[in-house]
Image (cartoon, rainbow, N blue to C red):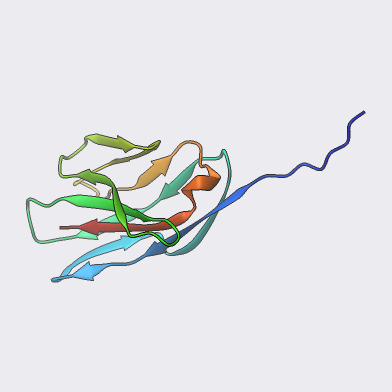
Length: 115
């Protein structure tokens, strides 16, 4: 019988809070540790006085510049990229980032922003 130790990879997600011009974005803060293969959800809620705005999730990998992961300005429309998805819900002022199966390669800094 082959007895090997069971190991699992863990990914680390760091999150930042951004505010500008009286509008605000609140997201999951700090370090989020997720076991590889399990789902992950990063919360993002906002307050704004504008009627027409665009929402973004940025990702920044180690030693790289931030890049747009997802963008949406359409209410109740699911946006997807690289296995991640988010749906803008204006009724609950939210744009949560989700992935059904997190991978070690997803380890990065994630920013929620509005423009």
